[in-house]
Amino acid sequence: MTITYEWRGEFDNADVNVLHAEGFHHRVLDTDWRAQLDRHSLGWVCARDGGALVGFVNVAWDGGVHAFVLDTVVPAARRREGIGVALVAAAVAGARAAGCEWLHVDFDDELRPFYFDGCGFEPTPAGLIPLTGRPG
Image 1 (cartoon, rainbow, N blue to C red):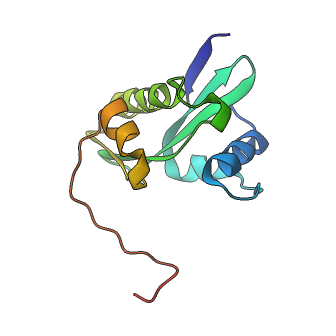
Image 2 (image 1 turned 180 degrees about the vertical axis):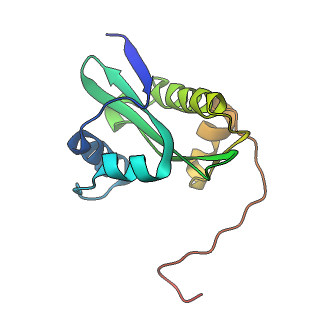
Image 3 (image 1 turned 180 degrees about the horizontal axis):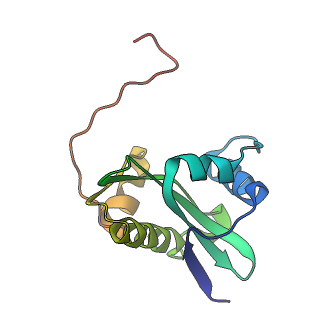
């Protein structure tokens, strides 16, 4: 089948919860993705192979010119097929069409080749304060 990518595509919360649990190694939650995305996101991209959800990325934003890639996920069995790169490319196009000037991402170190080489992000200095797990 041909994989399709849809900006602000339709999805079932259960499908995203299962995909997210596998991709981020946690139990399946009962997150109301629709409400969360409607409240906080500029958009999202759903990748489908036929009817099956094979990828998802969330694009949060500040209401202005900055957008943020979050929760890029593809099932383990479908990785290294270019789905993740195409998801991010669709997110870039959606954020650009919405008038954003910057698209940010943060990620674990092992994903550097994916985001820098595959998706075209450039390294920048950034900072982070962990809000859980240690005093601060």
